[in-house]
Length: 439
Image (cartoon, rainbow, N blue to C red; front, side, top):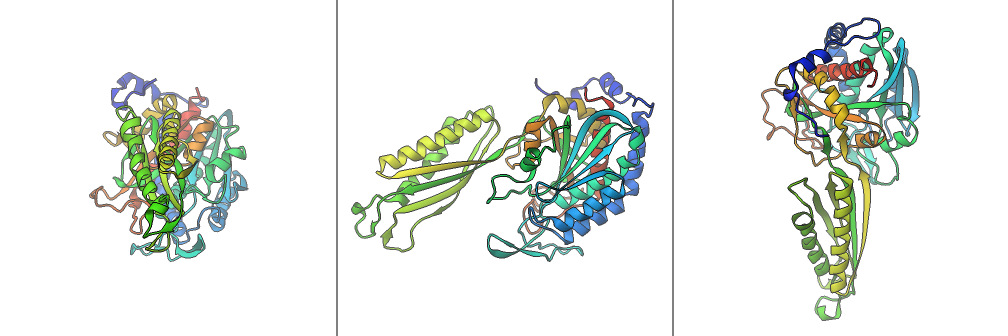
């Protein structure tokens, strides 16, 4: 079914949704106020956690220090804690005072191989070895904020456990940014190791440096793209550059393939329904100005928003590359590696939880975002169980989205005043879902 916008919901629906009770009589109004009060009291603590993580970033599957801090905090709250999940992941389980379903909340832990260029006092100066070379490391995507926010949520809900009907599972996940040399990692590995087996629904947020603080954004259905890696190897016949007629030139063939791939989106995808992207990011072939090489390699990325579209795009890439190469007397070996599925917000779950997000965000502060061509491995959890992934504003209120440094850049910056809203949103989503008995 198609999701309705929150503004289109009748007022009586919102009233009903805002008036249900826990079995103990602990009303939603009561715990809304309690969460808001505790989140405000915890603000400095959450910011300090974030700054500590920011100063000590760790790359994917290397988050040992990070995981240790998280596990210690969860144990101090009285949660059951499992460490070493999917290499360095941490899972905390909070059992409520009454029986009920299990809901999961997720934060990612890894940093990026990017040298930070900001002048904040807690700037990262960390380095590590990545792909065989020494690199700077920083939380240039906001995962430090995600962890700190979820630690705050855990502290609040742990103090309310007797009034909770069900279980809250806190998932702190490594390697969201991917591991090129592994077949499984991050959320995919978490799911394979059974972290979602007893979960009915999962919620996650991502802070955004180009969205004003105090704002939440969501989208029902496909929200972020599936991402696949593209590799094409063109093999021809080597020759002296002065005698090109003796060659089967893989450079010319590769150039024709690049142009041909532009028709995948422009002529094969119905862009009136949903977009797609095919990008060639690198071409390499040859070592000398007067030698036509035998082989050229190209790599790129593919973005799609449904499995049907993905099948179509993959098929057309193979047909175009292989047949253009054949027409030149060359061969093209096409390898397409699926990385992340579509980040798909379950329609029913999204509609059910919209009143929660609206109530927490406030009038005019819950917005529907456009399709995002970036990807998220939260999508693996959503393949296992219904999930809702939304965005939290992290840009100063007077900032310009076109000027604010984007994610994955050296100047990435977050306004920490937006963290309280993130804590309130995740905590209320969990309790509202459990209060609905997962129905």
